[in-house]
Length: 200
Figure (cartoon, rainbow, N blue to C red):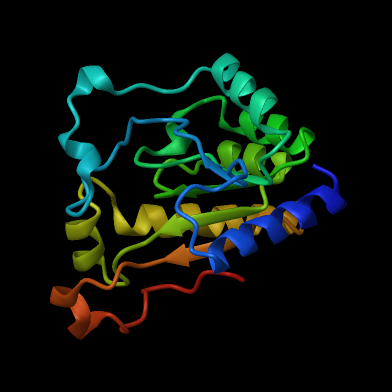
């Protein structure tokens, strides 16, 4: 989408917002694409663990291409995740590259438990704009209770690996964000430090 067309569309969206329109006269500018409905964890707050197994799967690369080809004329950015773990989909780096080639900004969210060295290299090479990582608990006991099925030390190492790979490959992207849900029952230990330092 050309810069002038993007600006004009954003102006129309702003006008609709100020008029409090219920029905908009523009197509969406952002899409969430469920690249994988499969997840390897059973987090306490996530509804994914309650979805029957026969309803889960990963998106084919061909379907992803079809979505991008149809949406690239009106969408500005995409999120390649929703309820599942995108790193379960082996074609995730290809999806990122395809969307980037279409001129779209690309983001995805992960629990980082499957961020191996090879996957980190593939992801960094594909140059997504943003990777956000769920890390709900800066203490081993809290993290492993919330992120059922994950191992605290292993995930910390995976996050470090992603960041050091980005440094080694001398890439500016992706911008990496670590997120934590503020569970009331864990607030007494919310600000206690992790057992190790993650490089910037």
